[in-house]
Image 1 (cartoon, rainbow, N blue to C red):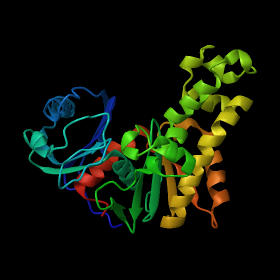
Image 2: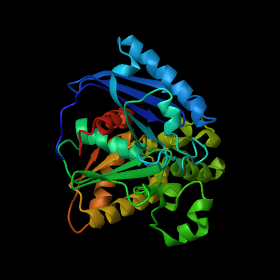
Image 3: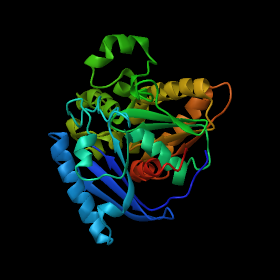
Length: 328
């Protein structure tokens, strides 16, 4: 994975359904700005990029720069997108028609442009300035509302035949669960993320406490203010870290399913490192230790598994790396 020097100012943008992260770097790769904004104007690509470039121009003005001074812009999206086609799909947070979005961007910017999936760019961010720096064979798995993954193989990002490699949420680790959910196209979440994501953990916990009177007291309910309908994944994870019996029982299935999925990917890809990111994975030592131990219990050889270092800035930092073509 040979790096080359940055040649000028770059911008990286990580678009999320609710929040968008902006990163601006200087010619030496130093980060000049990292700012998060609430995502607005979802209705159409045209309206969205109107909003996006107003925000970008404002941020650039704050550090005495203009759009014309940017040598490249990288943008990550929560869906499948090809850099050479510009068609965003499988992006429920941005339900746009499947059409080339690059003309909407080119109304504002004519320089070097790179578009990709947000998890792919998060991996590049971790490879450039995070947990995977210097590695050539890396698997990244993000566990948040859903589950995604990305792969660096022989120093290059692997995206698959249709730019859809890494949709780990659709891995099948329980055939019965997968069959009960029907076709992937008919489900909001894939079979793995239906159980092992933050959304899956929340659903399991709320179902468990639907009748709290029939269950022993649990720290989960205390953290949720005594209201089962307000239980969140963070309550379950905190209670589990404190040794709460009900929380540990609820977490067993999500942890086992995710560990099986990661272990299956490891024996196929043989990475040097597995990086675990996303809001659930960032919850603390309890979660990371459980996943690390369970994954390695399934494997014929151990694999290094580390928490992502860049947090919610990884995608924007990786978008800079992609725009500047410094990692491959």
